[in-house]
Image (cartoon, rainbow, N blue to C red):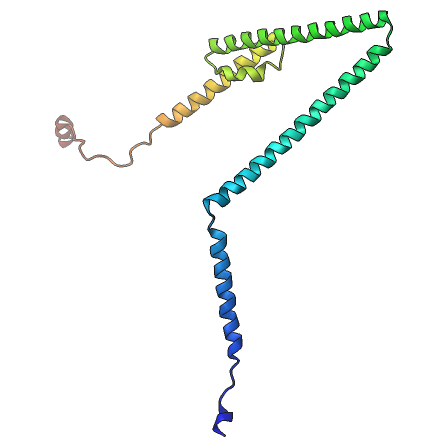
Length: 186
């Protein structure tokens, strides 16, 4: 009879929780530790994937260029002799115009850089200003940028040089003996 009065406990229930906790702790430890070879393997996979993507993109671009060349060749074959000559002249004119534009761009870039150096501004701004393409507007932009930078620098210099007024005296200030005597007789 005494045995019936004892509480019945489900010991298996408590044992399962400990096992689960141990398993989660082991999993956490496994997740945290990686060997050098694991890291190298993951890096090589990522690099390989990037290379494949780049290769695929390059192949697509080349394929488009090939198709464009085939189309041009087919159109060229259909043309008469006079049309062929006109097409060649047109193509050469386009190439000349493209070269002239590039030459003008370089010249403009060079002039912008020299203007920036004259105004003591960084020449890195030349790449931004070259898109304006009008010399007068570029010079206006350079002067406004210079003014803006100068103002900003002056503000920052003033801010750095500003000092707070002293709130307490140092105690070393002595009164003038002459003024003390004068106060005595007033």
